[in-house]
Amino acid sequence: MRDTRTPTRRPLRRTLGSAAAAAALTAGLLGTAVTTAPAAQAAACTGTSGVTVVVDFTALGGGIQTGCAPGDPATGLAALTGAGFGYAFHPRFPGMVCRINALPNPCNGAPATAYWSYWHAAHGGAWSYSTFGAGSHDPAPGDVEGWAFGAGAQPGITAP
Image (cartoon, rainbow, N blue to C red; front, side, top):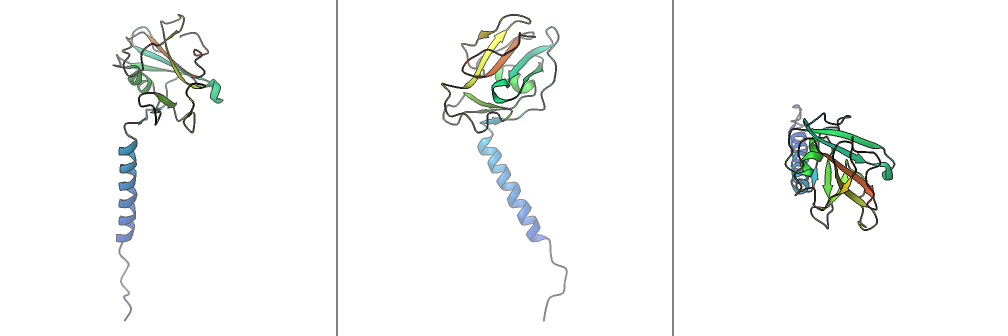
C-alpha cells in the first residue's frame, strides 16, 4: 500500500543544515584571512574624532574612497575595517594585505610588481611610506592612513 501522508520536511532541514555547516566551516577557515566591514563612509574624520582612511583603487579601475574609523583604532588594520573597508591577507605571505574590498580579484600573486602599499600622513600633509605593517602600526586619532594598489605609489590625493 502507498503512503499518502504529507512528506516530512526533514530532507530540506538536512540540506539547510548541511549548507549552514559548510558556510560555518568556510568562515572558520577564512576567518583569520578575510575581514569584512560595513560599507565605507564617504567622508574624512573631523579633527581628532577618529582616523581617516584613504583607499586608492584607481589602478584597479575604481576611484579613491575615503572613510572614517571613529575613536582610537589599535592598529592600521583596525582603522581600515573601522572606516568600512574589508581586507584579506595574501595566502602565501601572512600579514600582507592582498585584497581590499575584494580587489584585486583574484589576489595578486606578484607582490613585487603590484601590491597594496601602506601610507601615513597628517591632515593635508604629505604621504609617508609606512615602515611598519598595518597590523603593528598604532594610528592616533586625527591621523590619516592611506592605501594604494600598484607598484608602491602613494594614494592619488592629498591627505584630507
